[in-house]
Image (cartoon, rainbow over all chains, first blue to last red; front, side, top):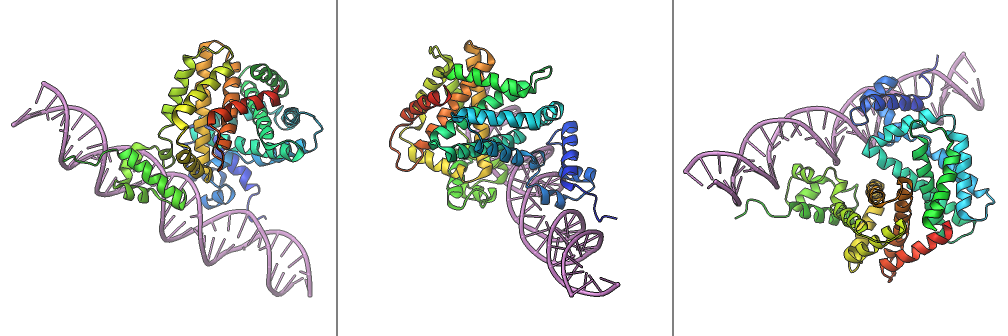
Length: 186
Length: 186
DNA sequence: TACGGTGATTGCACAAGCTGTAATCACATC
DNA sequence: GATGTGATTACAGCTTGTGCAATCACCGTA
């Protein structure tokens, strides 16, 4: 007889996502979340630094995945190195989960505070990518610009990918976005 | 004999910036800010939606300025339209205020919550720029990519501009960043 | 079997951010 | 002189987030 039911963090995330989806982020309290997950407020804040973090459990492993992929890449151009890393991760973690990801993103996009947190995660990821590129070879400014450009294309692709009715893969949309970016900038 | 001292919002902003600079954002309470400005907490939250907003009073006028400049621009390429608008605004609002701007940015960069808010403002500005470009001619995706690319260059330039010892103008650094972006993307 | 360390969870008390509501009162307008 | 406007205030209350100490199943070791 275990002392507690397992997977507290995951139960909290599931409960939170359901409630945010139903009644919105601002209208649900941490008290409601922990009641649904059969835990206490203190436990919630042991697992997550604040109420928003509960929706970003996976972003750190995503970042590590991408950085590792870049470090082991052999692309010549820094932009291509980042893009191919994003392709790999897109295949591994997003495809065949379109519905779940789109729902989570809809919740985030519906609330300014969550959107800010998402932007913060993206900025941290951009910095990590820039550091990885910098370690590989180039100067810091080029690394920053390549990382930012790749993330810009990624964001454009992601927006399309989460549109209802869209059937193409994230990978294809990403390559399209990179092509568009090249013509728009060049 | 006026009933209240004038310019409540500006007094609050000044008091807040001083305190954040001295003791950090997290270690200063709204109670301290309003005490220094000789007002009450309720008045603070009448002027600013939350504690962070007090540092972003000018971002809305900045956005309007840039959007207006883009609308009245006659550049052919969307990227050039945004960049020249940013140049104009950089000259008008930033130059000869390097010290003040750098201090404010140092305060923001020192705190994750403030950094997130700054990212949110930048994202809103990017959207507004994309809308302005979209209204001028192009398709939405091109507008988004051009806006994002211009903001990326702007951010790279701004980072350099606020480095201690940097003497070049923001305008020059922006044009340099655009050139670098063209070579790393193209 | 006994025993002590580990670590996830909890209860409690409290600071701080933020909000709704109603009251005040100089100022402007007529 | 009457009246409305609008910025400020007082107050009461909810929610988020934190520090600290206590609990107690589980695990390794003797």
